[in-house]
Every structure is written in C-alpha cells, then in structure tokens.
Image (cartoon, rainbow, N blue to C red; front, side, top):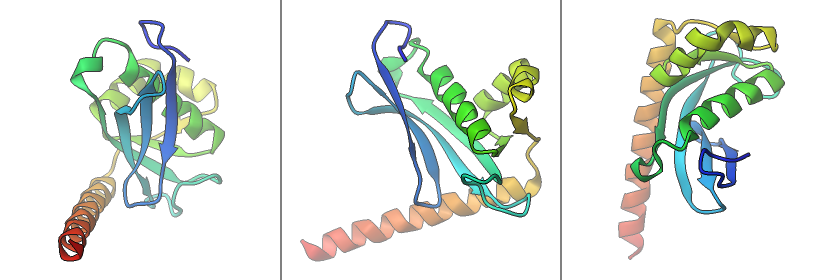
Length: 147
C-alpha cells in the first residue's frame, strides 16, 4: 500500500504487553505512527484470532508525516484485521469513532462488528496504561542498576 505521496507503507501488529498497537512505517523506515489498543474482556473473552473485544484508545502519527493519510491507513488496516480475526471493535479513540460513525454500515456489511465503549472498557484502558508505565519505570531502574 502507499500513502498520499506514493511512498510505500507497511502496517504491522505489535502485541505482547498490556497495550498492543498497529504501527506504520514509510518506505521501510522507523515507525512513524501507531494505533494503540487493549484487548478487552468485557464480552467475556480477550481478543485474538478467535474473537473477543479490542478497545482502540489512541492513534498518533508523527507531525512531520501529517497529511499523508497514514492515520486513515492505520484505522482501515486495524479494522480489516479485526474482521479477519472476528474481533469486536470498541472505538474509544476519536479517530476510530469518527471513522465508524461515517463508515460503520460499510464495516458491518464487510463482516465487522463494533460496539460503543462501556465504563469497564475505559477502566481496562486506564489499568493497562498504568501497567505499561510501571513496567517502563522498572526497566529504567534495571538499566541504571546494570550500568
């Protein structure tokens, strides 16, 4: 796929921590944007290849890459992957919410499922952010101790 300038774009899925992300790279360079999510359990199972909920809560692209359509590429790729994996999308991120408000019927017609965020979804995101920050602090302490 290509951005608005014609540069090749790659989107990869990064999981493994309390917060996962779809990351975008331009022309094989470093990651320049990401769509962060938490695999939710509000529906009874966490997201993965066999369904569950995925709470998208933040999307960001480096300023110098603004206007190239990368945020839209991130959203569309994340939604397409959610369809493939039977994941219910929960749009907390304003960009995801706006996209689904405008294109929700098309998304559902293509096999996608989404629902409005609930209080438990927000609590889960808050907890995941706290866990990620704690893990980052611990990693910094370990690095200082080994120096």
